[in-house]
Amino acid sequence: MEENSQKYSKMLIPSILSISILTIMAPTAVSPAMAAIKEAFPDISETTAKLVLTLPTLVMIPVGLTSAKMTAKIDKKKLLLTGMSLFLVFGVLGGFATSFSKLLLMRVLFGIGLGIMTPLSTSLIFDFAPEPERRSKLLGIQGASNQTGGLIFMSLSGYLAAMSWRYSFYVYAFVILSIVLTILFLPKMPPKPVKNVNAKPKKMSKKVIILAFFACMVFACYFIINTDLAIFMAKDNLGDAEKCGYALSIMRIPAILAGIMLAKIMKRLKDFTMPVSMAIMALGYLMIAFAHSFAMVMAGCLVVGLGGGFALPPISLYLPRIVTPRQRTFAIAVIMSVAQLGQFISPLYTSLFVSDDNPEATRIRFIVAAITSVVMGIAVWLFSNTLPKKPLTDEE
Image (cartoon, rainbow, N blue to C red; front, side, top):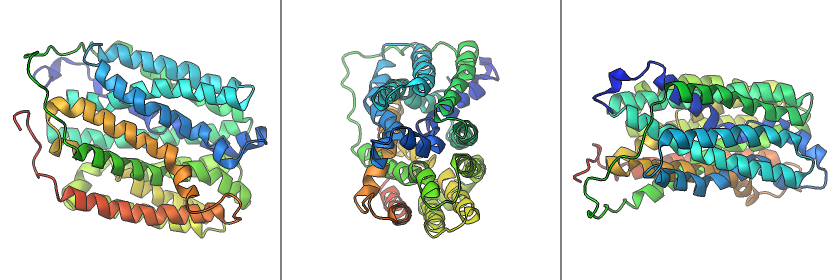
């Protein structure tokens, strides 16, 4: 890939990044409509209602792992287009569901498409940017693209949800642009031939599982704001769906800037990047937990966005220090798939500490998110000290 990189279109990287805009934030894109969805289906509990946001991430785990393995037999481009087609059809159809069970079915099928897309979007960066410095820069930009997707989706979804919760699902039609870019600019990527079919594949380090757990918990902390903010604001009369969408979209701005600056941030902080970023995220959650005005909620969202902006991308950057280049596509799938589980367990995790019946439940959940963020930041830093400083090679 490195030798022929000049022959690819200048639109190749933007095409890959357009997929990133869709992936990480996609399950929670309709979060501004959560209060309205709960109202439309009054017989379900708050935790059950949140399945609309979290169920797709649960489906993504086995699908993402299967998708990574399928790249050994199927062209990556064909897989991507299949995933994006499912994303488009069932993402939009969620807005036409006539019952909550049908809505969840649409979200499951939507999750299959998203599960195919997510690990491939990151592995493509490793494919087309083998140089560590450029890869770090692109992963930071990918993180910024993820947050840009959140900015677009959340603001538009909040505006549409103010008219009807059904309209918020129309934001998934944005994938049409990525489908066109992928068809036009992403080259065919057939499976690489195996040089020695009799050679036994090297075992993957168990540290990948540890890193996947950390990724899961970091995502769980970050996405608590997506699952709980709309309900929190509605309960405390701090704003409607449109204001919630505005808050969730504005918080992406510092996250975008942090992603763009990631390479420079990591150059200075190195392995301290995670504890610093998670501490910033914790501060933002505490600000929201004790907020009694929309202005304070907004301030807290901005701080959470800043911390999350340079907490999420570095997770993938630990991989070259754990696995060899030939193991990376599957390792990325493991990390990304398990990380998405964080979105699913997010409301379940906080429910371990507080009941929905507690009148201060949402505020306590934000405090739980703050404490967990600090603990995870320290844990990742301690873990990073056990890793070699340089990337592994296929000979190791």
